[in-house]
Length: 363
Image 1 (cartoon, rainbow, N blue to C red):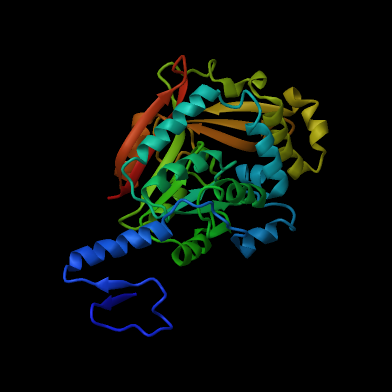
Image 2 (cartoon, helix red, strand yellow):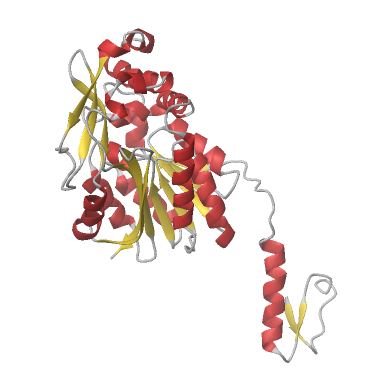
């Protein structure tokens, strides 16, 4: 309460916190700001006991209906709680990605955020949530009111991200939805629960795994964004020394046990077999094929696609697209009409493959 110097306060409110209005208005304003900064922005542990989850009924129905849509390949791998378990098993094993390279990627992602003032962080496909947790820690240092909204087709991975990142920032809502085909539902939730400026992210080369392709996702996300919003993308890129013979994802021995079971899980969901029976015969049941140039890259030149297939019927289980770095940046700016703020390439030893990070906003 702010009261004039000569105003007599009633006894029932005289004991609450109040400030006498001085002749110096600026000094009074400074005192008000100082008071509320101390009271509201003090670093206290979050005590969020529950998080609202907005469930797209179209997606939830898929969990009890068979078969899953024929157009789903990667989505079949991740969908539902079983997909979450299989994925977390794969990424938490040694050999999925070299730890030192992963740390370089995270440091580069954090560096992209240094000058951003973000109020809402919308994460498409947050994975295990660990990278997002480190990103929100940086963003929170600039805006303590930061909120985090994960979006995933897997209820297990969505709940994992809420738990992990919720230890760091407020999570007002999680969205169980399909960010490839059902962005209208997602957009309605974001309009209700987010404020600008917003950061939209798609990390871990998820762009290169999408069933519906790059153009579909980037265009839909662009339609969700305002002038104050940003898009953060991390993808797999082709190094100057890349060749079919050198790409590890074309060799069975490069897949750890968890990743093998993840792939087998995708095949089993379609065939009805047990994961174990496919896993025991992995070399014969799973094959790899490289497509150069990638026919489904939707206008991105110099892109290759590595298809993981069920060897018995040649059905595509999943796809990894690796991008030509300069071609991808050109596509973002010229075709998708984004203005790139930051772009950084990080190559693994041997410069066979690497990761590219793009921070952009609508132009």
